[in-house]
Amino acid sequence: MKKITIAIDGFSSTGKSTLAKQLAKHLGYIYVDTGAMYRAVTLFTMQKGYISNEFFNKETLINSLPLIKLYFQFNADLGFAEMYLNDVNVEKEIRTIEVSNFVSKVAEVSEVRAKLVEQQKEMGRNKAIVMDGRDIGTVVFPDAELKIFMTASAETRAQRRFDELQAKGDSVTYEEVLKNVQDRDYIDTHRDDSPLVIADDAIEIDNSYLSREEQFQAVLELIEEVISN
Ligand code: DC
Picture 1: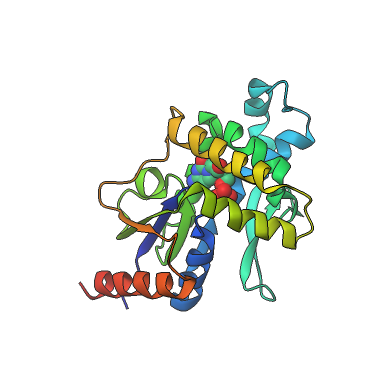
Picture 2: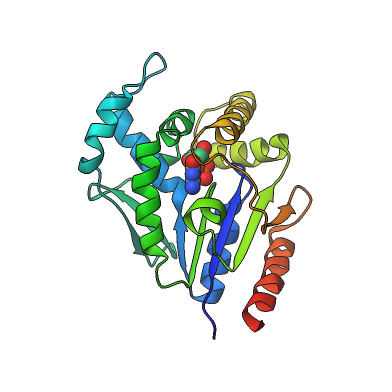
């Protein structure tokens, strides 16, 4: 069967990773969550004290980039690959609201993007990959056979993220999460380097009123079409 590259981009909390994981599992493809990589670099930046609400020491981060080793390791119990930062599993730490609040700032740094994009391209060298992020269809895999762009209203996305964080016992308010979603939308779409834009050949899916299953089936049909052509 023909192996393809599937690029999934879109706003934060649109369920990109849920869809990407479902697809990868169904197709036997590799799944790569590029947001996790930006989050891991952000965690490193916070741990080193290079970023706070008052300052961001970009130059020091850029000089430290060679010290950052990132990789994914498949966890058979969970059924997906977890993020490792310098040989430490950081899957939990990278999902906190603190990391979410700083990640867009770190993701704006061109040197950070260049390092991660290079690694992402390498991971997709043999195709049979589903990668999600913000610039996958535009920068990482401009030649991907299938590009999906996911959207949903900010309120719908904030409610989903809020429910997830609450279930994990994170004591955040809905208003805090909504503000984080709106702030990240703004920074992600306005940054100079690789802003979040819809690729010309991407298919847009607004999933505000779609169930996971409906969305999955719709994308599977698109994949079948691409593979049979
Ligand atoms: O998908 P996510 O919410 O975990 O992503 C975290 C942040 O990382 C997001 O606010 C923007 C950034 N990001 C990016 O700039 N490029 C990507 N390919 C993936 C994520």
